[in-house]
Image (cartoon, rainbow, N blue to C red; front, side, top):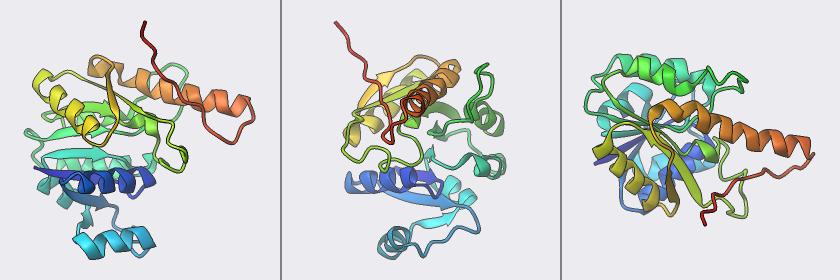
Length: 205
């Protein structure tokens, strides 16, 4: 099984390293003008020769994690449209810009680009700057949602493989709620005038 991680973000790099350490075959898809000479990315490329354009990474991969900045999602969507995604499992790890109506979701854009894929939302609570936003390792949970029951089990196992607790948040229609959950933490941190971020933890009784 090959895992493709799209985006040149800190989250993409961090998750990629975790999955490589866990024994998975990982390829990184980046935009055409991405600087691969930055130290960590240069080392990844030298050791594993695994950095390539978006479309190439999508073609090679069975499971795809989208960890890109929002400004490059349209480019990723075009790459998805150019490829047969019917057997691909896609996990959207991004967060759209804050929308009070919860009507805008990156997941909807990706669904239109790859309508035959098995689409899930997950890892977005980490944020694309992870782990810089969680330097002392407070985040222990990853929330995910999606409709395909057999593949949902695979997503859960994928999350748990790198040490997170996987929390099922229901069907893919709940993707905007997961994004709102992320933005709520950001808003509270901003209003408290704190440099550190605020995180949520589910507590069951």
